[in-house]
Image (cartoon, rainbow, N blue to C red; front, side, top):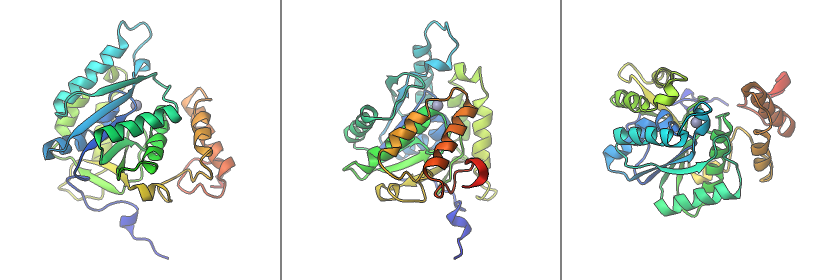
Length: 285
Ligand SMILES: [Zn+2]
């Protein structure tokens, strides 16, 4: 059996991922811009209603003793919102690194989808490793699987590159995206997100020809596709395995330990089914 190259990565840039009411779920204040700032601008330009929800308060993104971490981070997202042109973000204020996978989060997401009558739901991808990012990815996938509404899930990338099936041309938008990223001054003081995301978006033009200078990568999945491989790197054998995985992410302390934990889970639970999971131990995946 042969597989065409375009089944692994798109060779065509698109100007939009879809039309309709867009709901963007961001784990922290800044992910909405880093991951899908270009898509938000394109929806706004097309006249699509856009709602952005920031799930956690982002308090751990500021040094201990900061006088007002929550309001600082809120103001940064509001500043970016004005530049992107979508209005006012909504803040759920889950504790940073405390976005727990479970009924409460699932219900909250399902209610948000229903209230906004969302047709496209943006979430960080299932390849992310930060626990808030991954838990939100898993919860959004589960919420849409059980949603009566025909929403599409649009995975975006922040900390870990995803496996894309759509590439959005943001050549004409990348300068304004950088301006929006510049709103997150408290975060830029700690890490050069502007340079990193510009690099990622530039790399995503690799298969798109010289006319495309920057692109955002996405994996767009229908409700039916969410229930079947190959999107699901985890290949969870039972519904119970999902909350178990979410809990396992919280145990280790360091980023290195966390990745090992996830890999071990993958190996122990799905030893022959881990294709696409690059760091499974002892090479058996
Ligand atoms: Zn984040």
